[in-house]
Image 1: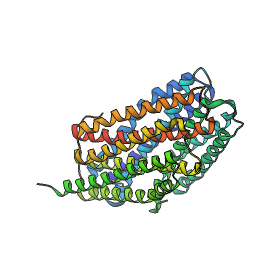
Image 2: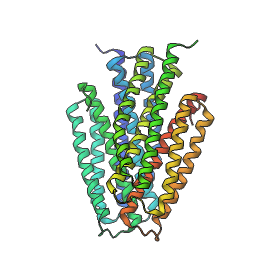
Image 3: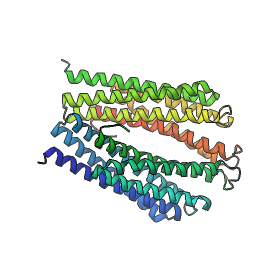
Length: 213
Length: 213
């Protein structure tokens, strides 16, 4: 038998999965805007952000209503508080996609990236979007094995990020300081995006196994 | 008459204020380590971080116990959830101080910063530490006017941060790309530190006035 509490918790998971889908979509668009110096797509990502914040707030209210009406304890309480933390992480992921879009807009009509690093950001964007999909999936399925994969994806992200820094620090870097500053910031945005996805994955594993990762 | 709930909420505020003091101290030490290429101080900041994380976890447990035992609703529930968010922000502030210390250690025995930008980081460090003190104070006093000051401090931080970027983007920058990358990351760490302090201030104002900022 499903209790009202479990039904509400499932509904909350659905809302969080939707938010996560939007964060992934925002990062996908922002990355495409960045790689193609596409102002329309950058503007769209920037405009969509406010809606995301509103929906995140509503989802937070949903979790708070659950807490107020059901007054869960022990594991149930932890589940709702995990959900609240997940919302905060997804909120931040959207903000990082926003930062990518804003930097793209600021440099338009110029390309933000020297062509030499396009491949790195194509790959970081791909991993970020994949991680969003995995997060979306595991907040619903609570599949801890699938959630554990996020740590591997994050390793891939960190590897590319490290290579990118090696390239920047190389004496052969010939695109100047301004481009290096942009690449540094953008690299950090993608890396942090992945970190937030990992945090959500950790909570799924903790909920499923009772073991902190 | 003080209820058990209010006593526990006060105790929680005291724990959060202490965490905040530690985050401020971490940023103070990390900044000094950065400016003086002081390896011992950098190592100390790095070592202290684990203890901070443990204490943040304990404080989080304190908030969760309060939720489980008192099952607060409405404004009281919001107060505890605000406290949980404040803990997450302070956790992040400590992590940013850690990043400053780690970058300092990585560059040692070299100076991380070109002398030209030392003044900027002295000032950003001072503002960050001041903001931590203000946060520590307002989570206890719940003084919304004092909390509103954090937004002004953040404006000062953003101004310095902007000037720093102007300097980096200038053709006259003569310290090379590697130093520019470090300065970009460090500038971002201080700016984000201030953002987290502002978030806590906003919650204090919201708790005091019922008006979101």
